[in-house]
Image 1 (cartoon, one colour):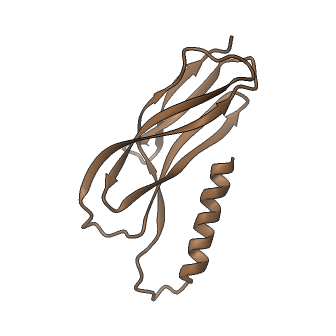
Image 2: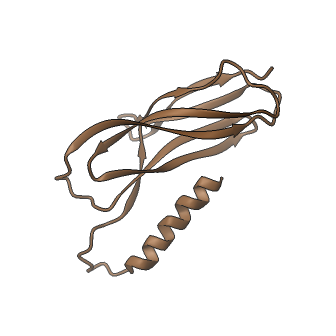
Length: 139
């Protein structure tokens, strides 16, 4: 939740500072979802413990930069995880890099039921988001 507020605040500040003119020749600023390739989670959780969850994501080109991880609660024990990137341009001349990078977030186990983490892995051919899932039981 905190990351979502940070991403929103950053976008709002950028919008206010850049102005709203459509005739502006300054580069565009936009957020994009980055592909998560893998995630490291423990085999099980213990109630009320905090765990560091590592993810590996891909930066597609030299114009895209990592902003943070957006972890949203879909249900009591279901979490969607998306790596967020930003770019200051929509210039297609950006050099493709497909660089893998790592990030992490801390997760507190508050429920005694198994947790399902859904990691964003890209959009399918119809433009719908796809996820890979990891289920972690709670001891």
